[in-house]
Length: 167
Image (cartoon, rainbow, N blue to C red; front, side, top):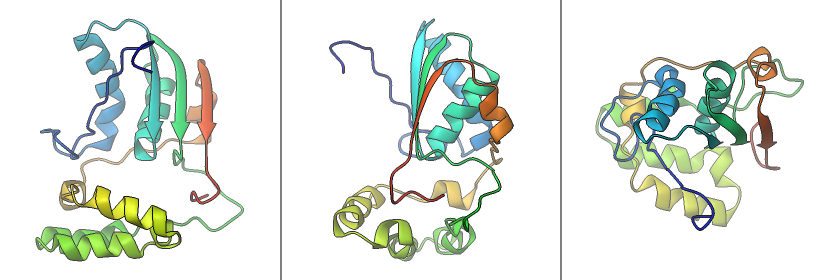
């Protein structure tokens, strides 16, 4: 896509090479700050998982310049007819706080989202090697996106969810 678009990938607060502490509630505003800092007046936004939640919240509350939205596996707060599978963050935070990152990574690999298919487990294991659990140790403020928030989105949007995604 780089031959047709300027691509900007940002590490979320508390992840990767980001120096900012985890604060999910601040991240929708970060999208606007990054666009402004780069002088981008019109843009499309893609978000995966919690990044999808950030993208939805940004589109619902601060959409100046946003033309298109794509979210993949973005969680929203909704009453579901099926049980909602969650990530046991509190259980994973204990070993992260104790500096037992290999134990925390094993909990991730045992989670139903990753334990089912060998290729998913292998990809997750590779990704977890760079994950330091900062967001579990100091999670910051949460971000909630509701169906009413989604209704406020006025740009073209595509939402994708896979067969193995949580409800």
